[in-house]
Image (tube, rainbow over the protein chains, first blue to last red):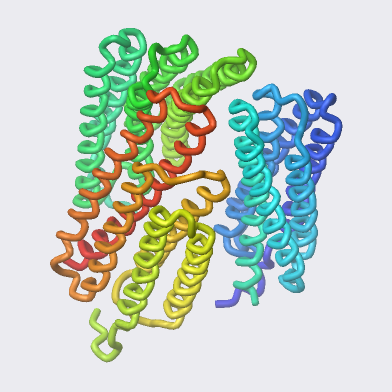
Length: 205
Length: 205
Length: 205
């Protein structure tokens, strides 16, 4: 059945780009948080704002979805996409929050490297979403996102192994194992966004 | 399409009230557990019974669901409601179990305060379910449940921050971080029940 | 509606048997890992191979599923079955990986006993799948799998209680709590496979 008179509502592509821009901004604030740790309270507060902004955008996309008859791709995929983008921003915010809650004195090199991975993954996701409209030429983005995830995996494994071999303080092991694990969850969440985009593109191939 | 000759089966409302009563009873037993910690073995055993009773009720509601042609609201929402109620009771039981398994000598004020939040949330959920039949006037309950969740969030954050700043024993940090996190999961699970109820009511608005 | 001219595609039963054989092999390699810990690097590498082989089989079953018109049972149950089998192999591999990552010097008797439970559960799952074609006489397998899960539960509870009562080193508590929990997740994952098989059989009763 063709519905030639009812155009697909392409507004959604702009909304995804906006949502991804919020995610990239959050990732960059987390990088500043790691590099200017003296400013942590102010930057953590910015991340809470980014989280709320992201929730608002998701809510807005959800409402548009209810009012739209013909969406550019499956409703469930639109839902999956905004949920996974939300997860990334939530985890980024949770990382900063955990540093403050645990009274951590300074980020380790491992945490900084993990954060750099997140920034680069978010940038790739944002570019992929900016080019989603054509459903073409997106392979390069997820190849790079998966490569970054693999790199992140090596970093976190080195970080955790160091915790146990350095014979450090047990409370430090508890703190850093939680922080590295959270950062890795954010990295995995970026990969999950890429997987949703890949699924959408494959359906349209 | 109207089906005037097939009345909706309203028996379900009574079954939800019964299931919620079991949850409130479990929450109150956990409060006793915290306040009369010398009785912990007996009270933990009561919680295992409450968990089994809850499983039985869920199973019973599930069976009624299969035999019923017209349910008062979506089948998937009935499933979600009984699953989320089950989760609360499971987590309450798991808290008591963890205290015993970890050989904890006495509850901390933070754990007692978290338990009080759970009791009050469960009471609100039970009242909301007792009034679900009309699908009206339930806003007050979830406003209060979300307010309690926020209060619980402040309590657990204070509790976890104290663990790390007090310079206490690392094994105590491990124990209490797990216990506070589990209690917080129970608080979040109560909020999840409220969210399911809210969704059901919104669909009927 | 009967479709007598389109035979059900029974190839799937053979594919499940093959997938289960890979899982049993992985479980047995984990047992060797525990018993010949000096060979751990080589055996962990074998487990990574088993994980990749399992992924390949799942992928293959998924592709056959897309090309098949009449499957022997619901598509979603086939998906659930291969996902749950995958989870078991992933967790088995993760256990070995965690031993190495945490720099653990030697397995404890608790870890060895948990691994034995996993091997016996996997063998039961494999036998159940070898007999799935008839959808009959499978009760014995899941009764045994649930019994093993209960036994595993008692072992892990004893193991965790010992960690806290022995007054051991806090870093050891962190390591072993993670390892025992992972092994328990693998045991629960075997039970999840059994639950999927049970659901499939009940639908065909």
